[in-house]
Image (tube, rainbow, N blue to C red; front, top):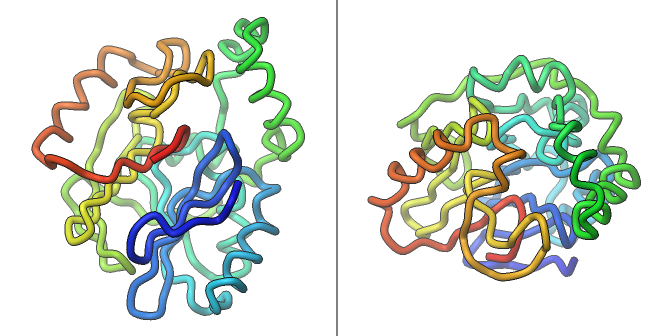
Length: 228
């Protein structure tokens, strides 16, 4: 994936199937999600490209605690002394290394898009996630005093602790896996949609949570999977 600035001070990183982001504000950075462990080297390259180093990372925000979102969070903590910020309902999952929905993935490996994703999981060390040892709790409605000053919106359903991060001054919404902008089962299309039912802890709750995003109006939607 080409490293790109999506809007002022917001950068998309990751792979063709997994996104994580950097937010730049007042000569400091917030990392939003951390992809897979193998994305660590990409993270170092991005810092260098932007003219930053470890000391400029002020926050690590996690939308939820699946392996493709917490990949290098613990390494970031060890290196930059920055604890991951996470909703309390997902802390146990983070401390267990992500607990991916392996049953659903295995049952759907007959789908070419899922098989390709599963191969990426293996190749990117997605089955050997360092447990996230130290977590700062965040809650619905909080405005975080970190670069970008995102507001936290609790949108459970994909996981119990799924959150979105909203940057009101830039009209940007990091929605994690509350929404994708591609059909995860076929990797086709470009429409905001729920992930498949077999990937959500509570599919009905995931749908109901979308009501908490409606009042935001038009935003630049930045998902964990799919294009902006």
